Length: 352
Ligand code: SF4
Image (cartoon, rainbow, N blue to C red; front, side, top):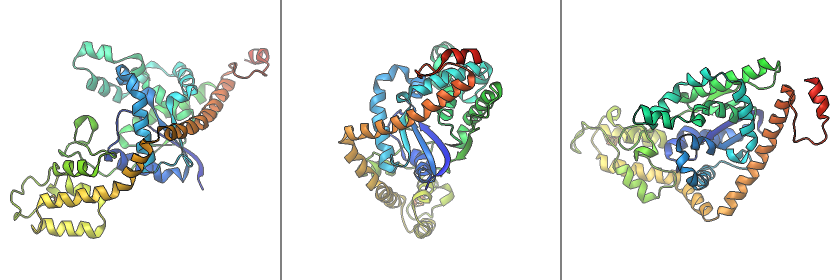
């Protein structure tokens, strides 16, 4: 039975998800969905803040990410799974919140500078890429959370500043309108084992060093073969060092049970196995763990109407909640809710 607390989290639809997404976020989402009232959003407007030229690819990306989520066990009967742009109330809430958010709050957001730096080669390109929408993304993110009055937000440590921002916005709204309306969302940090990319660097789809949830067994084995191991180990007869094994050992720690980890340690440190065979076994382990997910994903991919139906169901549920939040906000702000035919709008006007 889910606790009454609401939990919220979202992902940008920018491509098929990799195993870092699974261990860093989705695994926690699956665990939390039965414990809390959960809202999981495919934040497609956020994708446009940096990839506005690629807007036509968004529907396909929404489809792909939904397949990934469903395949790994996000359950639309337990969690509300929805697309941000299917809930236009979020946009209106974002607009209202943008009116009360001082612009220097947005400008000081540390991740914004990093994003612009990543997007642009020089100053003039930065001016063009740093759009109004990009500048306002922390407010949109606040609207994502506050539309559902999320009390807990599942985030990685690196996203803590976003949540701090949303908390400030919630506090400011409550203060300006003398209302105890928005809860101040608290972080629920996801536990992320350090899964590096095949080259030993941070795993990322743009770096081409990841393993996707949707990869086939053969693709996975091929990628695992590229994993950087202990660089000091030249010959098979050289003992290996787990602390120097850059990729396979940390992955074993994420995938293997205690018994297998002890076997790997013994075989590596005593030169009983070569890195090629050790990686082959790891590839098999990954494939075993993801075989069921991949099968489910493939089946769902053949039935886009069903996937659409699932999203439609979640979108409808999400809209109801966000519409209530918007209506309550307007009442607190003394604004007219034009969606209500029966209200005495002059009385609203006189009371304000
Ligand atoms: Fe890493 Fe396995 Fe090679 Fe040891 S044997 S260095 S754990 S790949």
